[in-house]
Image (cartoon, rainbow, N blue to C red):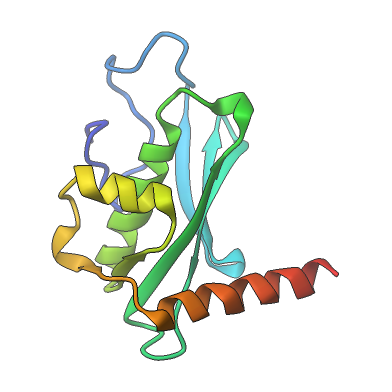
Length: 142
């Protein structure tokens, strides 16, 4: 594995010496389908996540990425890029198309061609999917 292109069959730990000296020892990205998000862990500690939803129309076809967060304590290490690349590659490998509502994911896609053939434009149904996902999350928090 290289730091540039992890695959879903390989752990997302970067064994190369290309990482800065203050980089974490171990970075792991994993799908957390129960919470509909990909989590990124640094040395076993939660460092961030990227949330996704699946539209009611063709739920097995698309993943709508709508919110990406890296905890401030882990900022400046390139973790958002690692998380995004792995989440998108994993999703595509599982047969999903990508819809980027999240500004960070949309920005990342503009400068990377890893999954460009599997990206769909944002449509009103996708925004409704995000509204529904947020409402469900709010109800669960109550």
